[in-house]
Image (cartoon, rainbow, N blue to C red; front, side):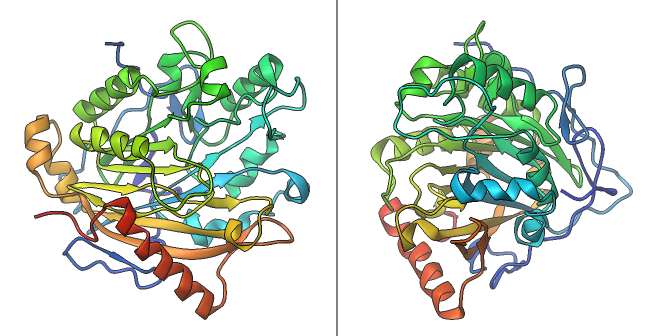
Length: 395
């Protein structure tokens, strides 16, 4: 998120739209190539987490005409294992990604790692960790918010958990889906873009070791899990009542599958019925289907983003999803009841997918050849079929 005039987390900023293959700003919505207590908002100051300030949406100016669109960019899983760890040696190593994902008004991905150099490996097959400077690298790439609601956030036990919490507390980028208690873990990061308030929530529904051993509760730290959706639904309802756009980033699905499983589809349907505007997700290490579920835009799987390739070519399939939102439509729904919201048109106007390939040498995703790019884009379109999503919202 750029820093001058329109967009803000308490402070305001202005951003440039992400250039994607065939992205359009035409009015018809389409896609294009290129009973727990509700948690409080994620405390933020500027772009860094803070324990003392609360983000509040700025009221739209009556003298400034809102832009015709606001862009939100999403990518998948990131870690810094193996040869990817060498990226930490150069503070500017990820700056190359700024025009790829960071040029959108709001950009987000999943940081799938513990942030620690201490601790003991937990009883799991894979273990990921990274030093805190990874957060600075991601900031330099233009990221505005990260989710850490995933199955690798506590790979190194209580000591690793303590270190990760400390890193998040001083992070230059807001982190959702993880915190010292459930209220913090389920709290949204809140942004204001050209008068449009956007609440971003992170959660995981993987039925795995981490969600059972380290769930965030009323009194204990951990990840925001939604095997029981009570807390997630409370967070969604509170955000919907206060903010114009609600985004939920889920960690879900079955590894190495290109179609969403039943749990993913059920959760997406549940969130759509609660008025969530955008649902995106990761974990399967594959590009799963994207499209509209009624008025809600759903992207089931965004694949790997910055990653150590371990399973051949298909593990390198990556990309950035950029959604164009109608600011006037979003503001018009401010304070609307759930029935009114569900009857309203989608606020997501267009969806653009920029195919990328993760680099073998450094794990950084880049645009492939024209032929490969077309094949990856066509696969993204094809995967919408088994995801049971539409290429445009229902009228």
